[in-house]
Length: 58
Image (cartoon, rainbow, N blue to C red):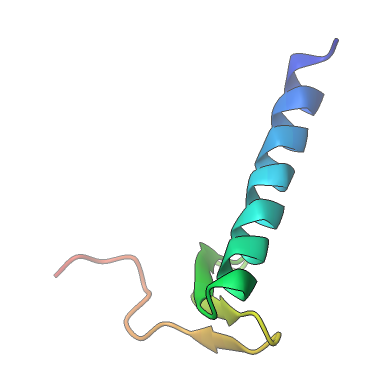
């Protein structure tokens, strides 16, 4: 068993479950893209950037 592959699988499954829950509850998930932008992804596929997602807390 490769621990890193198992961990990657669990992370992916957690994201998939979050998407299913968002669809069932008519809400969205929030995540950070590879480019570093924080976005909301709605169950209909719309992706909206979150304002002030530059990472600073000021």
